[in-house]
Length: 88
Image 1 (cartoon, rainbow, N blue to C red):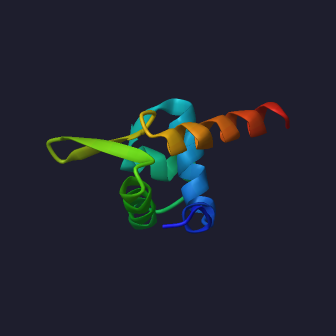
Image 2 (image 1 turned 60 degrees about the vertical axis):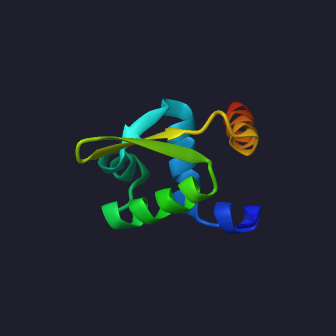
């Protein structure tokens, strides 16, 4: 998937910003903070995970998503987000 496809959604960008800032959260909390419903958040997270920008771990029925700091692309996107926020 191209960068345009990944970053073309405001919802995905919001999710990336939230996880880059906070680190890790469950889907319900990500959805609440992003102002999205659960199903939409889940779809966005699947796309972000398929592109290795986020990862998840499972505790029983709860999935915790975290920003994938190990991926060079994810690190660059996080730097962009941080720089953008600094220059507001």
